[in-house]
Length: 271
Image 1 (spheres, one colour):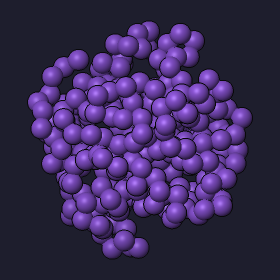
Image 2 (spheres, one colour):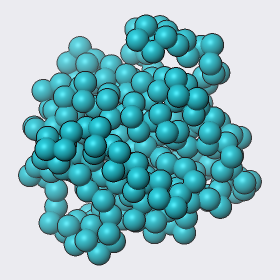
Image 3 (cartoon, one colour):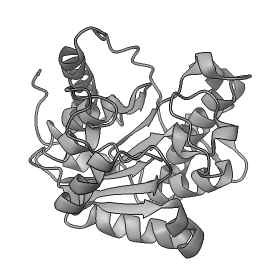
């Protein structure tokens, strides 16, 4: 929130002013219960579902990536339509449990158990390095999820990887959700994160991916694993903000902002 004061709503390259295209509202913090992760998940799902049920576009600014499950669950609860997920990260986050709990290494195992969120429509971009647990690999294979490593991006190029990612995420789906983990970016550029992994995306590459994914339309998005206390000069927070506004700008530029409203066909019901 604080770092957003550095930006104006106008982007010269896109030729758009977000203030003229939409109404932006800060809905405040979700009340969490650190000692009760499952109840915290319910709180997050309720907040996202309540916002989404109005037809608004939910943007979640998060820390721990465990929120990837309750955010998708909240959105999925107000629609009967199918949702695909594009998840940009260095880590697979698809174990069933970690330390006997659902936490930051597990969100996409549980999100893809939802009735209208199929694992075949989960696409993960940037996965690799020395922090992908072996326990996750079996789940990737068994569930037939879609993985693009940093090597894939190097060999195929960003445009081709995103083209294939969109094809898989949208296959048989009515909407796509974007989950962006800031640690997918090379650690030198985003020191304010809890799980840095060298060898990730460059900032311009990250923004290119976000713009290409968002131009097809999104039903919601989150930016996670930003930890300002670890940061230097707020550069990680600034990068996270840029990802959000670039996604919004891309949707406006390509006429897909608001496309998500058509999938909302169920009323909000608290968890």
